Image (cartoon, rainbow, N blue to C red; front, top):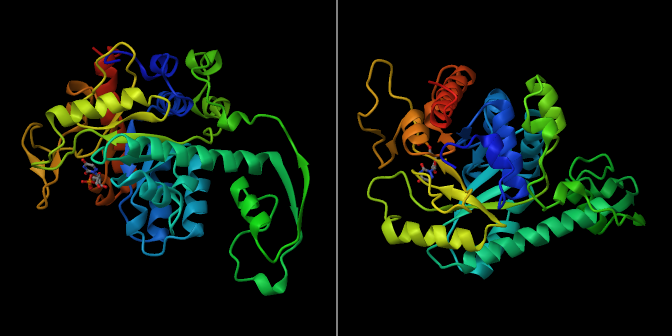
Length: 364
Ligand code: UP6
C-alpha cells in the first residue's frame, strides 16, 4: 500500500465500506488532513468545524473536554460534516473491559456511537475490547436501520413537553432522533409502514468499483462529492498501536500484537493510530492516522526536535507521510493557535498532500 494511491486502495479487497468511503473522500478533496478540534465549548467546536471543514477529511474530537456538550453539539457537528464532507472521529481511547466500554461507547452523556463514525481503543485489556465495541456498533447500526425503515408519524408536541429537546419532526436529519420520538413517553405516535428495503447507507459489502468516482473524467470536486454522496451509516475503530508522546510504552511486541488483533477484525478495525505505516502483509490495507504533527517554524530545518512541555513530540507532515508511510496527519495546536486557522489548515493540507504525491510517485 506504500505506493498505492488512495483511489487504488479504495477498491482493494479487505476494505470496509467506511474505509473505502474515506479513501475516496481523501482523493476527491485532495486532503489527508485531520483536524484535532481540541476546544472546550460547543460554540468553538462548531466554529472551527465550519472554518476548516473544506480542508479536512476527518474532524477529531475529545467530546469529554467540551463543557456544554449536548444534543445540540452532536446535531451541529453532524450537520457540518454532511455539508462539508468529512468524517467524525471521537478520540475516546477506550481501555476497559468489554462490558464497560459498550456502555461508554453508546451511553452516558456523550453517546459516542450515535454521532462519530470512528473511535479508537487501546488493546491493553485484550482483544475483547474490539469485539465488545463491534457488537455495540452493530446494535447502533441496527437501531438506525429500524429507524430508517420505520416511518413514524408523531403528533405535534404538546405544551407540557417543551423541556424535551428531541425535535419531534419527521424532517429531522437523524432517523435515530425519530426513533427517540417514538420512545418519548408523552407523545402519541403510530408506525405507519415498515419497509424491508435494505438501506444503502448501512451496506457493508465492499469494495464496489465506482468508475464514476475512481477515474478522472474531468469532473470538478463538487460534482465528485455529489456523486460520492453522504457517508454510509457505519462505525469503525482505530487501534492505538503507537503514540506520539515521549517514553510511551506502545512499542515492539505490543505494536505487533495490535496489528494481529486488527487483522483478526478487519471488518471493524479500519486502521491504527501510529507513527509508521503498519501494513506488511498483502492483505493489509489499514489506514494509519498520525498525531504529533506540526510544521517547523519558518526558517527552521525539518528534523529538529519539536514538542510541548508535557511530553508531546512533533514530526512534520512530510516525515510522517513520505518517510513513515502514514495516511492521515492529525493536527491540533498547529492549526488551532494560528491567527488565520482556515489559511493554516490549507497550508497543512498542501504539505500533507504534496508528501503523499511524492510518496506514490505522482511528483518527481
Ligand atoms: N494524540 C496525540 N498522540 C497520540 C494519540 N493521540 O497527540 O499518540 C491526540 C491528543 C490531541 C492530538 O489527544 O488531541 O492528538 C494532538 O494535538 P496537538 O497537535 O495539539 O499536539
